[in-house]
Image (tube, rainbow, N blue to C red):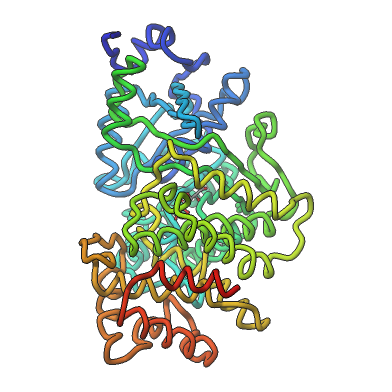
Length: 497
Ligand code: CS2
């Protein structure tokens, strides 16, 4: 057995005898991208694309400076300090093969929680030409039903009064853009990489609304100078486990305190609207298109919704992972029925894409037994995800008289699980959600008011006023509270098809 080597810049050549390593200059003064929210997904996706480009000897002035705006990001900062911002990406194939590779495209990391100045300065630096974000679907501070910016957030109120002391992405972005404008520097592009339809347009609207309230002059400049390309991002990136860390050390001889694991599949489709230049990402397979809308919608309503369908039903049944759900024929067929009968009809034709192939490949990706993507990751923050992934599809199907029953069962399962905080066998499940208390309190009233859960308008919009939906939902929820055997209902629904 090899003695594990600590991953850092000094040991990099030695690590290179065990796995591929970056082959380019990693000096911290060549950063061109500032990225907010350096979770596993960013490290498996954008940072990996950039790494590949740099391996070709390109984009050397586009290194990434990661930014943490949450106290919890201090853990990553400590690890990055120890590892010179290097980390291992472990690509896990379905045949059991693991391909580890050291990624070097992140060259710096700054926290903005205690002292915002270094982060503002980094964003306002002449070298910074793009600020990208993966701050989760719930991180954008808007009401998912109305799409309006939430001015009630105390952090937003604070930064409106104290622009020099930002707390949220909005405060940081305006502080940095203001400084650039005063220094006569061009604006940067803002590239949102979260799973939200029209993510760039959404950001333009939110930042515009915030800036208007903070500094109307600046808001005008932002509207003219900043571009917000819409983008569709895709790569399944499960939560890193202790086993991953141990496998890397024991099997591959590299000590990395926070490697990232992911599937082989990767996709990024972006609108080519960059106000201050961009890396030549097309050289490593990124697609640039005039309108990303159809791709985003396809991905959110099939892949992300598919995940939520399996995740919520699987959590209730007691399946621990997405691949365990797919191994179960009832789950697999149920998912396919949902995709074919409820999600596909609202997508229409997407140029250059065969939706049947796309769905076949989704099922294969979900089945990857090596990924072990936990249903708890998928169920986390459902209150921010479901309005975009699943509830939007219910609304659209109601409008065209389409099928809604597969998605409705998922909402009922979500209610039951939020109420009991347990699976159908009584095993406790931790509800990880910014709205967990509201979800629990609403769900708890179901026994006396079957529609209580659906009355949460910030999640469900006006579904409560749609009789076709409320009738079906009441029936399903009623049955489920009598007998929560979820698989029975799933089986019934696919066999009567
Ligand atoms: C998942 C996504 O968060 C979720 O519920 O559906 O994280 C998904 O794995 C990625 O969007 C894949 O690109």
